[in-house]
Length: 57
Image (tube, rainbow, N blue to C red):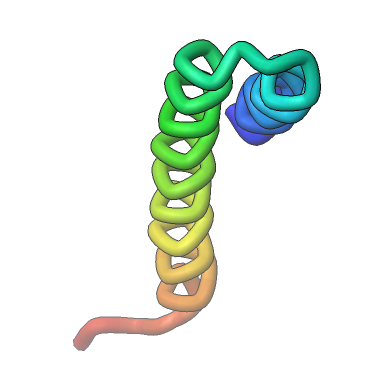
């Protein structure tokens, strides 16, 4: 998912450089959402990994 965020970020930068501001804003929004979703998934898996060794008795 982070790979797709970087791809959309690249599209946004290139479109912004070429003057396509609407396409650039749309791609940047998609990249931002994908980045935050990937970050949330990372935090969930990090918490699961840290809690995996605990014994809950």
